[in-house]
Length: 385
Image (cartoon, rainbow, N blue to C red):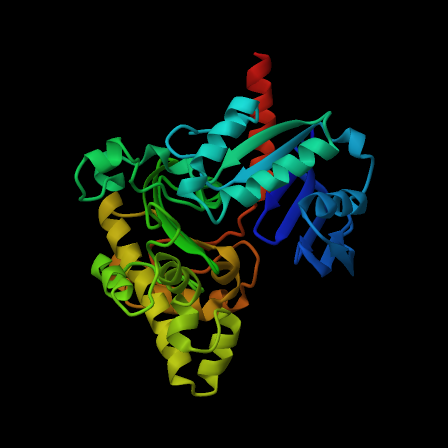
């Protein structure tokens, strides 16, 4: 089956056409700066050749039209469209055909993911108008974490806030954590998705049992611009400042904090590593806090799993920043986790093992698009039977 995989963000469209039987990527197109006259379209063909151009893209429908035109082959050959949807709440524990009822339910969840679900839905609205013949399936980022036990997903709030308002840990990056943990194949594995957004997951026998992101993607690790874990009273202190609003505090926590906030330089780890090499103490501090929290969560999830059979790094930083992998694992030798410096330095964006200690440490690039395509095919097959 040929599946068009769509991942729509606030100003971007990422798309691939995948043939599920062979797992072949037939073509790949991304558009950045949606809503601007200088949007950037990048296309890759089956040979990996890249073309890049700018064009005006006023909205998602125009952008999707341009993306589909740039894809190789006959679009009539696309039998289904798989949409990455960030938040499925408690209702959606697996992929779902996007019927009017399901779309309405996703719309109802916008309050839980106001920065993500609206953009995911815009991609669906545009695609359903442009390709009415195709069947649409939602694949949820939160679904992998529906197996969290109450001891892991409940907060220490009055219980009514959970039963009435559904305030609980949901977890995110589930498609990535599911793919790399399955690819790793270990019974007990700690998966580290490190990018501009970052999270860690404890996986036992293919099941998520705890994860660092919570009610929103703000909780957990230090990230590019997100604060990660902090005392809730910090929010109250920020709100008590003169001229502070809920929106301004949310902006601080989500867009001005993390690596950017601590370093005062950038959220880009590559720039921070360069700055540290040039004796920037603030860049060094931001990196130290980032890797310390990773190490702390690995230790916590070691306790959750009662030991681990493997540790996996994925995501843009996890796959490409050897120094971060090394520093995140430094001091974990008592667990049997020790990085091989030569293997680690030689690994850049490719699948590899990088350990010399007792516990395997892997780098596994996450193929979320393939998993979305496969989930889409399986969802449609289950409807037939």
